[in-house]
Image (cartoon, rainbow over all chains, first blue to last red; front, side, top):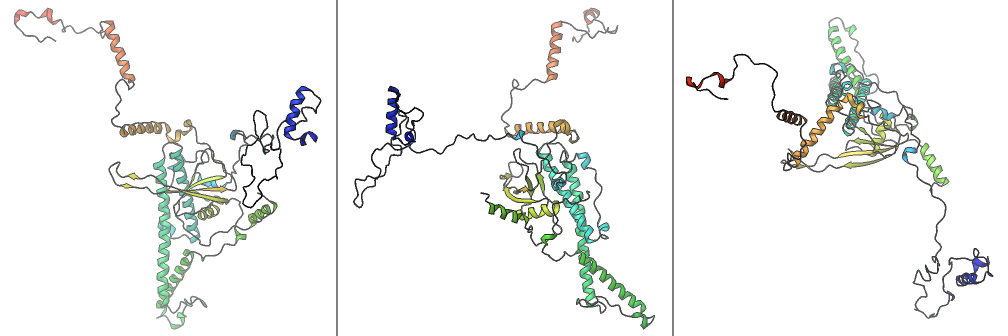
Length: 282
Length: 205
C-alpha cells in the first residue's frame, strides 16, 4: 500500500494538505500513527568509524514521540482487541456432586452434622475384655483394631467440627466414648502380648522335648509310641503329649500373632478404587 | 505446556501401578481428623490433622489402604502455637506442641455438608451453650482489663429495677395508698385513745 509505505513526515504533510485541498488520498488511507523513527538520515550512516569510536546507538528511547503530533509510540505494542473472558462467580458454577460411596464419608459420624449429638454419642456398650479377646484369631483382632482406629478418627473429626463450627455441647460424651474404644485397643494388645509370652515359653519347652522338631525339616511333632511300653508309662506319656500339644497350639497362635513377613505388594493385586464394604461400627 | 508427548507420558504414568512402601504396620496408633475446608477451598482438596511423625507418603498410604481414597498429591505444613504460660500468667513459659496438617489432592472431589443452622443445633443444647459462651467471653474481657470498670451511667439499667422505679413513682404521684383492708378493731389511733395524763410513755412510731 502506498499510503502505508509513506514516510511519517510525509504522512503528516498529507494530513495538513488534506485540510486545505482534498486532492490527496482519502483520510482513512493515510496512516495517522507513526510507524518509523523520525530520523530522515540513514540509520547505517556512521560518522566515526575508527576503532574505539563511540557507538551510534540512539540512547533516547522516546525520541520523536509526541502527544501533540499524535505520533504514537515508536514500537508497535503487542495488544489485541479481543475481549477477555470474564470469570464466573462461584455461586453460578454447577454444584459438584459428592459420590455417596466416597471413602471420606467414613470420617463422619453423621452425614449432615458431621458430629453426632451427645445423646447419640452416649449410646455405646462396653469395651471388649481381654478374656473375650483371648479366644479370637489374629484376623479377628486385626479387624477389630481397625474398627477402633476408624472410630477414633471419627471421634477426632467430630470433636474438631463441634469446636470450630460451634455446634454446642457433646465433648464429654465423645471423650467417654473414645476412652471406651481405647480400652478395647488396650485389651487387644494385652491379648496379643500374652500370646507372645506363651509362644516364648512353648519354644523353651520344645527345645528340651525330644518329640518336637524345631529345625523346620520334617514333621514338627512326632509322638512317642507310648502305648507299646505298657500301662505304667502311659500316664507319663500322656502328660508329655499334653505339654507338646500345648506347645504346638501356642506356636500356631504365635505364628498368627506374628506380623507376616514383609512382602512387596504386588501392584496388580492392589484393588481398584471401588469402595470397600464399610467396616462394622462400634 | 501440555504437549502431545507430555500428555502421553502422563497417561502412561497414570496407568503405572501405584508404588507403596514395603514396611507393613499392623496395629497403627495414629488418630487422624478430617477437617472442614476453608470457604474458598476447592472440593478436590481435603485437609487432615495428622500426628507430627506422619509424612506425605504415610498419609497417601493410609488413605488408600484404610479408606480407599485415591490421592494425587499431598501438601503438608506445621502450625506452631505461640508460647504460653502455665497457671495463667504466673507460671513458666513453654511452647505447646505443634500440630501438623496435610492437604491431600483427591481424585474424586468431596464436598462438605453445610454446618447446621442454629435452630437445628438443638440436640447439642446450643441455646445454653451460646449463653455460656457469651458469659465466658464477657468475664474474660473483664479479667483482661480489670481497670476498666463501667460507670453506672454506662451500664444498661436492669429491667426489674426499671419496673420497680416506675411503680414507686406511681405511688408517690398518687399521694396515698392502701392495701384495701380494714384493720382490726383493737388497732386504734394512738394519739386519740391514750391520754397523756396517765403518765405512760408511748413510743411514737
